[in-house]
Length: 172
Image 1: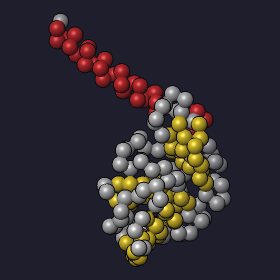
Image 2 (image 1 turned 135 degrees about the vertical axis):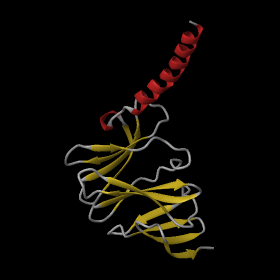
Image 3 (image 1 turned 45 degrees about the vertical axis):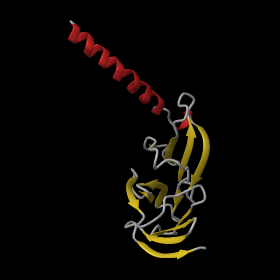
């Protein structure tokens, strides 16, 4: 009986926080107080950032297809990669989206291929890049073949989807 009681305590200890976490993450776009929105030029895709009524600090992020109402919820928060809400960038033709982020001591982007019914996501580490800060700026080329990054000490151009650095200039 003692062993069964121990397992029950362990089960309740795990079930409580797990249930709470699932409840916090369960908010959909209609339940989120919007803090920031970015959209593609044609208006088909919208990226929304906000917080839910029962989610406290948890940052909700959704990529929404405005023609179908379908959406893709962003991944859960990650201390290193989610410190800066940089918004989503879109290619001029709306075929690609890019979500800048910090990752493993440098900059990276999540590249979204929006040409299919369900967006395909690829993580791209930007070669030899400093981690983004509040003053870092990203610009996606019209065709999403490259991304331009301006940071505290310079500016760099990266090829996509490889993440290879093509050019860098230092700014004193």
